[in-house]
Length: 225
Image 1 (cartoon, rainbow, N blue to C red):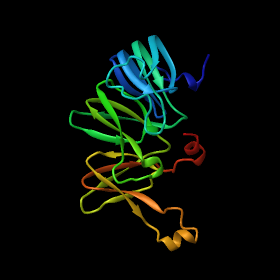
Image 2 (cartoon, helix red, strand yellow):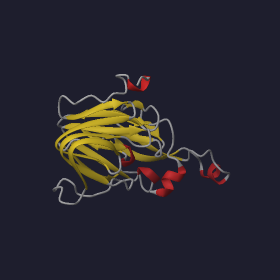
Image 3 (tube, rainbow, N blue to C red):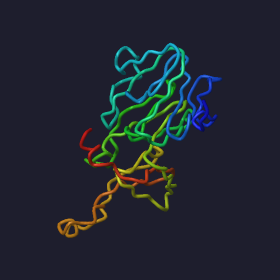
């Protein structure tokens, strides 16, 4: 049988070392040798001897909650084998964190991560009741974090001289040393007249970066959470 489908670009190769790699732009491959963690329901294929369990079912002290800030349940994957993860054909990226790194990520953008990373659900300081920006997952430790994003993300540097303002429905994450607060870009009178649809943003100040996606959260997805 012949087809471009069977080219090396699409063929899944046997893993040569444990851990996380990009299978392609839309999926992450994880060679499991012990344990790892992933968004529940994101596994699209696996081979080997693997077990999948909801977080909170005897997984250990690190797994404080079964849900991220966006109400997305997580699972533990244990055993020896290979698993592939994806979600709604979103683009996938891998962030390699070192000891001392702290990254704040919107829960809806988390796909999978190494067991060496710890996470905590925290309220975004200064964000009040800012829709999707109220709770985020703060990751610390050493290991790889698999993220997903609708479209190609934009990484914007933040400096002490130039804060950055982001839509809370578009933000993916930011370096945790940045300070956050809400910024109102419309007057009350403008809002009464219908406004521009961009009334409030999350303002980030300090030294670091912010990651945004090139689209806002779809309303039907937002209301489903």
